[in-house]
Image 1: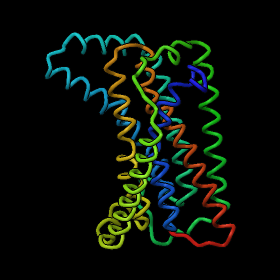
Image 2: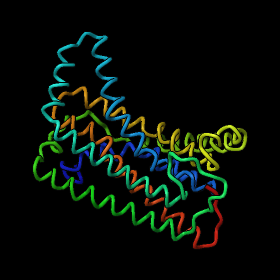
Image 3: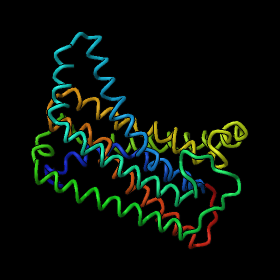
Length: 278
């Protein structure tokens, strides 16, 4: 509530981006820029998780529990709010588009194409262009979201209250634990890059570490968003449906901000003369 009730949806979804942030920062600490691919790749993972996997999980769960009324209510809600669903779908895809361009600025290749060995490492100029691309994407999202808030403020102010007790010790312990896990995951990615590069490169190209972050790291780090989406789909109200859908669109915007932050750090490192690997 410090930022205002209209920002609660943003706070809820942005807080789930901590894994992407820490995976990226730990990767940078290891001298690898490939970790920036995690928040950029999460823009892809969020789309299929929030729009397909999460609602399907809820429907299957209710089917086996024989809660057929809830299934009907959710389908009715989605049909009634189809304009809202379309809005979040368009914004999620738009953010994914900007993330794809930023990924190209980082690697010199498209994320679904094979990266060949002869692609040169990017200079700081390209990373700075990636920063600008991310900023433009963020600006577009903020503009259209503010318009939505003016038209339907209740979507952001009337979300279901959750019982939450702030505890700084739990926060610090959770952050430390998450950092350790992110280090372990980065170490595993590095090990797989060295041990299985001949196999993985057939699928991911020469930038195996980047590919692992984009497809595997992003999927793992997007699971908190999926959990938020599932809980809010189950509440069967328009504001909570908006929060569930924002687990894709709003989180994608936050991921762009993280990618922007990572590219800024990488640009500074390159300008200071430090070398890096993807």
